[in-house]
Amino acid sequence: MELSNINFLAVLVAAVSAFVIGSVWYSPILFGKGWQNALGLSEEDIKNANMVKIFGTSFVLMLIMAFGLTLATNVLYPNGLNWLTGVKVGFFVGIFFISTSYGVNILYQRKSFKLWAIDSSYQVLLLGIMGLIIGAW
Image 1 (cartoon, rainbow, N blue to C red):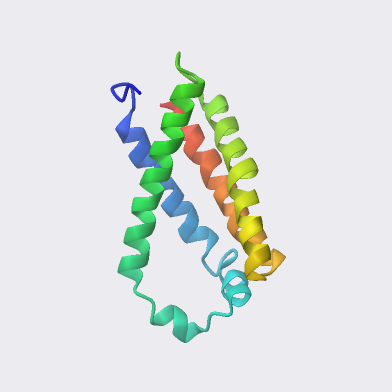
Image 2: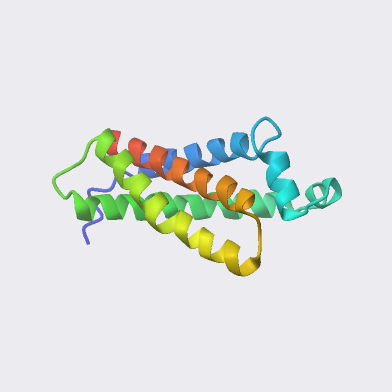
């Protein structure tokens, strides 16, 4: 696979956008309390978490995700793509791969539909935004 046509700045910006979306998505403004309750996490659990490890590792994983989405879009659209096609690919991956995978895990872990809805809709949204950024660049 040819890596010279990958826009690494777009990959970085896509990962940062996912991180920013997540900080709002999982904040008390939107779904933070519902997510926390669905997992059974107390305020003490949240306060005692190693946030440097969690945020740092999450960002690395988001970079890998953005890079993978870039590779996939380059394979599917070797002659280039636009923002709309990027959004479609991102949503496709989010809906048909990520949210279904989360659903299987939620069933076996016996977690709630609410947790699945919060986590998988975040992933679908962030992949759509990542695809938009990658496609537009």
